[in-house]
Image 1 (cartoon, rainbow, N blue to C red):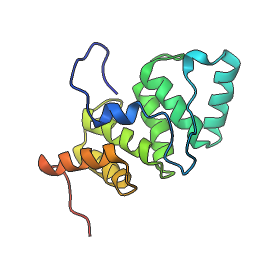
Image 2: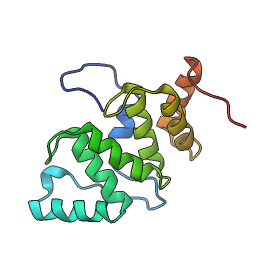
Image 3: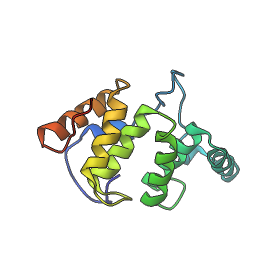
Image 4: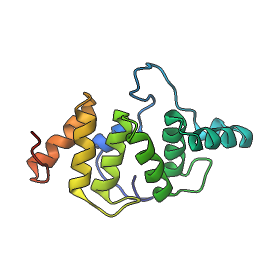
Length: 145
């Protein structure tokens, strides 16, 4: 979720963005690299994403974020991440929090970022736990009952 050429220290957002598996209870679910996909495979991935396949939505979102195999499109990546995050996948919820905290593909909204970090952290996703803690440290988190 970062502009080309922007240099900044590695963060929990980098860790979420580099995740190779979904937190869906299926250890080892690998996301295919766009560079290894043929046009036909990319079309199959897009069709699966359109039919609600969370793994395909996340993978396609990553391809849109990085511009690998597709034109870079942060807005489309966020749309796909939201569809997946709403299905309860922790790594994607954290990635969506990162989009909001950095204003990539959406307007910057620290409250919305904290919401997605909280949901992800509640599932034990370490990068989100860290980011949610940073929201509290910086005074942007909100207490939940």
